[in-house]
Length: 224
Image 1 (cartoon, rainbow, N blue to C red):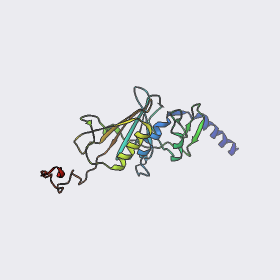
Image 2: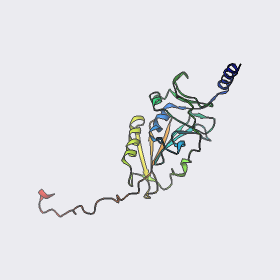
Image 3: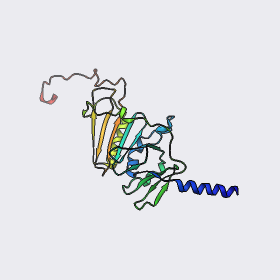
Image 4: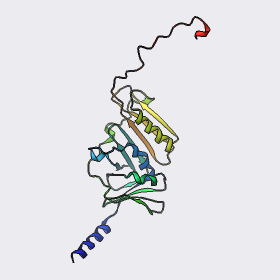
C-alpha cells in the first residue's frame, strides 16, 4: 500500500509539472563562458532567465568580473529563474532550431525543432537564490566607441571567440573612468541581441613606459 501511494504521488507530481521557460539554445552557448565556476555565490553558477515587460526574455551570466546579456525576443519565461547548465549539454546548443526547456519541477532539457528531447540534464537544474541586478553595473551613459583601460586579456579573448563563433562583428564602447566596465555588442546572430561588459583592472600598468628612448632627429636618410 505504501509503495502504491508513493507511485501515485510520483505520477501526480509528474502530471503537475509544466513548462516555465523556453529559450533559444544558441543563447545558452553564447553566455556559457561567462558563467561562474564553483563560486561560493552559488547563484552565479547558472544562467538567469528573466522575462521582459515588452515580451521575450533576457538571459544573463556573470562571474563578477564580466557579464553577458542575450535578448531572445521569442523566448518565454513564466517567472525569473536561475538554471544550472551542464557542460555536456553544449553540443546540443549550437543550433537555433533547438531550445532549452525548463519545467516547474526543475527538470530541464535541450529539445529539437519538433520538441523531441536531445539531452536531459541530470537532477534539479533550478538554482535557489537572487540573481544580481545586472543593470546596476552595466550602463550605457557617457560611453563612446573604443577600448580604453587595463583589461584581463583572457576575458577579452573570450568575447572575441564568441563574436567569431556566432556573430559577424563586435564593437567595443568605453569611458575614461577605470571604474566603468568595457562594454561590447555583437551583431549577426539571428533574432538574438547580445550585450556584454568586462570590468577594467586597477593595476600599476599606467601606460607607455617613460624609460623608452626619445625620438632623435635623423641626420641622414639611412637613419629615418
